[in-house]
Length: 386
Ligand SMILES: [Fe+2]
Image: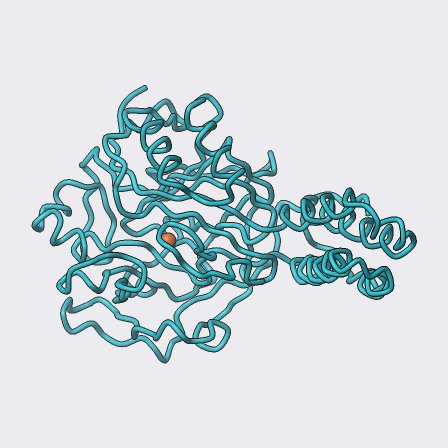
């Protein structure tokens, strides 16, 4: 060990396949991606490309800003009511109605300070779009009950942008006024004058795996690589028939695109990013496959302890430690050390470990730490001078 955390890594990002792209009949000059059924296996249905992702945690990295690049990290540590609401969500491992109300109250009228002396004044927190996500290392499913309202969502597996300023549902909600009201960049139009933004606020409860990755939008060629996409939403949103398909964006990959992430992130920080076009998605970092394998071994070990079966515990804990790649993050290395340490302990002291519950608590905490958890919501905010 003792390696230096790299300021960049290679990770696969999921894009639309070239064969799913066609000219857009409704908006000539634009491209469109074919809508895929929900049941598709992402590995088959998307074009996963190894991309360089730049770690903003690294003090040597210079993260671009919201107005220029489409996203920015903001500091939330000073908002005590918000931190209290996030602590409740962390403890409950879900968003309750009470927590949702507290979150909204903590943000209404609040200011988010941006670099360069400006701030976002939050005018409104949208009713729709408050979501809690839980995503296991390397794609491991940690939502056995599936989606239930705001809860049980996994991480987005592909690069997308959330809303088309000309499309559903903004078209219906704002009767066509959204392009005049909101700052936006769209392949066939833009509004650089408006001070009103429609933004995603993305807050990690914890994130050492499955990080959110965001593009510096100045490196996007929207005419060639931004695609209109119809996303059926009745499966997870309560919508009328005319608003049953959201107009969003997907993307094609290109070597010029520059991507950013954070290798460690907690609830004291969040991203704000442009709902109307900022490309984003989650990725799996190098080393997550090893963490998934350790998670599964610890899970089997916990089951053996619950069954008071020391032999089964020895069996579950005696597997060879999966190797980590040379290029990974400090946080993933630390999680690997903790998990392999726990398994080593269980293998060598199986009888003692089986008879108490101290090891069990530590193992469950270590497993929990490698699950990415995040909260996101939609904001209407005005850009103001600080
Ligand atoms: Fe999104």
